Length: 230
Image (cartoon, rainbow, N blue to C red; front, side, top):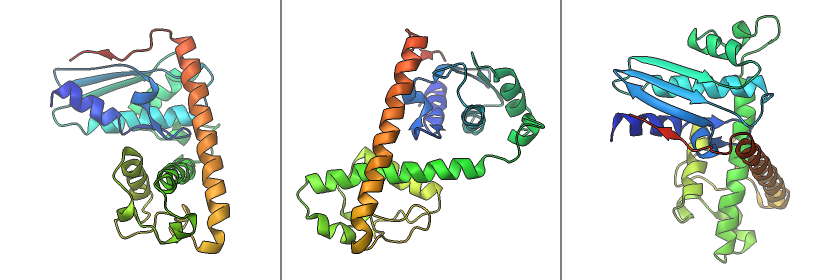
């Protein structure tokens, strides 16, 4: 794998916290280059006013992901065309944390926010996998007994496993498909109907927000293709 491909693969792990999708597939990476051990990444968002806490997380996560690539000795990640870009870029480069970066305006770091939305992504991902399982003909009443190992391989399943792993939730083959994203406890038969409804609602909301954001990005940047360089 080329160094550029490795940088791109690293950026694939960076999610928009609210949408639960990689910044690469969303088109948020305007360009990424690597030369002489220096990785340079430019990010852009659908609007000038995107929430600064989410923007900070994406810039910080991109910085950390690229910094860990073998052979990269220096990192320059910059958010562009955003009202708080200068503050965020300087804070991330200094690895100052959200509270120090927005001194006097922020009251807490973003770990709790990240976990909250990651749990929503787990719930939405469970809906996608459950729908595939039900479409295969399984009786809805048997979902309570389905484990991750019972589910046919798919990208949705792998993403669900990864998001559960990130939260420290059970993600092995012998673990239930339907779990509480807060506690990791298996969902019982009595609670399954309400659980599936909540998962479906979460997935629909996430998909709708993703469609809106991607549409706004394309309107803002009509030629929104990743500019490759190596």
